Image (cartoon, rainbow, N blue to C red; front, side, top):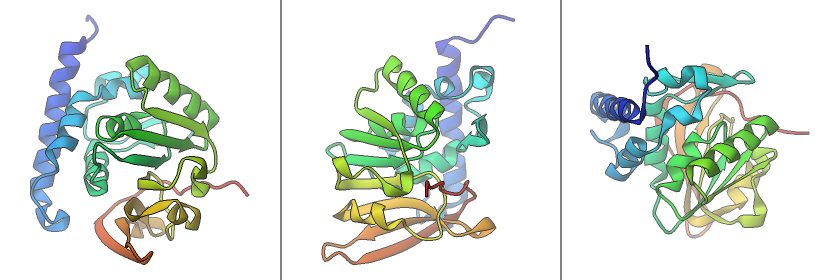
Length: 225
């Protein structure tokens, strides 16, 4: 059988986005709305997800399921990636900090939606591979470095938005300090099976408001002592 080409992958991406739409409609009570932001869905329709998974898994990259990417890590289910991005409410003029680069898929989504993306990855092999994949495809607005994500990347802060693709018991203090007043952070909060995808708003006066969305299950945020 001959290999799939770009036309085939484009059809699979369209089906993926249609599936996300069905899930959103079924979960409108939990999400508070029946559809996700059209800009987010357009980004997911455009970004070649099959280029951000190990090559042997490219043919299943657009199924609505997490996939292993190595080092006991996974790329998130497309629906969850879409919800997290929607909750982030990204704007074209904003700078976003991402914690947990993986192979770079979510950073690519964000690059379609915001001005600049800085991404921190604790696994050195992921960071170098993600940077290579992102640059090869043309996502020059993303900068990746190896580091402890719980400490953020203060050099380029404060940030309009922060997204964390790993779970923590509470928002890491260093990340809160790097979030602009009026900004928001999206991350899974909680332990074990009790994680909830949450939005942390930083009010203009510095106060914090936490809004809970849907139950999720993520790997724990790794730190370096």
